[in-house]
Length: 304
Ligand code: A3P
Image (cartoon, rainbow, N blue to C red):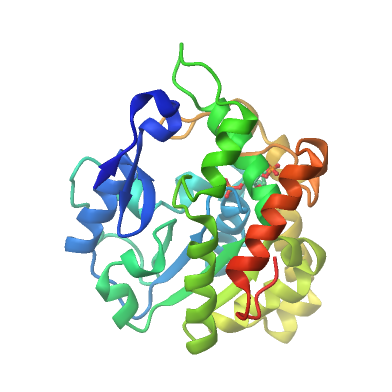
């Protein structure tokens, strides 16, 4: 485990390299504890993402989709009363924190977890079991802008902001939460090609453009397709509306509340748009990200 010197900025100073990827120390401890103790079941579902690719959105969607019998879409739905991060826990920085081993026995039969853990650092039982992985990523320009804004919002009190240039240089060299971004995405892309029944690979942009189609794909992939009655009742549209940026970001719980882990809920809702990078990134930076993406994904068939 290597650490960057403190003068590299507060975010970098808290990132450690482990098995080829950079993690804040709190996440890293969680990853190691998970690797040692987490036991996946065939029925488990994992939402795996690169940070800032729409995890909050997909958490709400998966939770609503998977629990639609128990919690029908209604005005008192749990998603309208709790932030998605309090409904779908992150393995490495919610459940397995501070070297603790959580008791997961009380979770219901189909357990839904989220994580940013890179593919080769997943607990072995996740790779070996019949569990399902829904992977979500986003184009690196919007991901980077979203991440830069987010980490500045969450910086500890009294610590200066990370400049765009400094954060950009680090991101390009792979130093970002769960970075290198490109390696994270590529490893799951390859796995989704090799094991399409285990890993469903989604892009934020595609979710935005074809939300209905993708929601049906997710439901099929998880073995819970929408029945004719559900289709006729408008269930697909209902779930998407319930989990939309407008609905979630305007909820009182998400504009004023805090997660049980302390972060402000509103930090997870900013613009929710494709292409907002144009308002923040100088053209040279955008071109550099495009170049790296082309180079890294060359020959893989993946385009972001
Ligand atoms: P922006 O910063 O570009 O607005 P994550 O959930 O992985 O942390 O990602 C956060 C990004 O997803 C933010 O992007 C946020 O605004 C966006 N987001 C949050 N909820 C969303 C929703 N319901 N629909 C679409 N985007 C959403």
